[in-house]
Image (cartoon, rainbow, N blue to C red; front, side, top):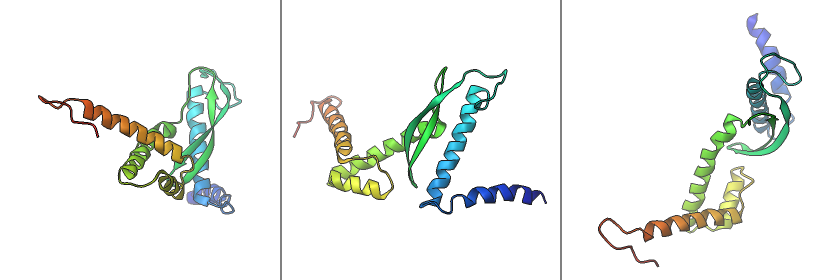
Length: 163
């Protein structure tokens, strides 16, 4: 009987996603929103709109944030707090995946893939916010790193000639 107690709300929650164009992306957005709510309420010390002695700060609106995931791009409203700051743990973890995306774009460019093709590949993977100009910026960073590396003299030698 205890299983039925948990299955009913779970089933009801899952049924709301059936009509979505991408049910898994919609589920991911819902989970991310719930995780942010729980995490932000823990930081504030109270649920939104409730008074509590343990409260350390107050909610102060929200900011829109676009998060690229393996399933696609999710648009979220990230809660803001008055004192201090709040950044969901999965948004700060995203920085690692951004670095991986930059590395992939740079590797593709080194291997002769055009910036437009890299942009199309990223869109096919569900990443909306990468453009050809961003890929060019990634490559400028790579060019600067290569130039810096080549200008350093090797141990006991002279710098390598620039092409």
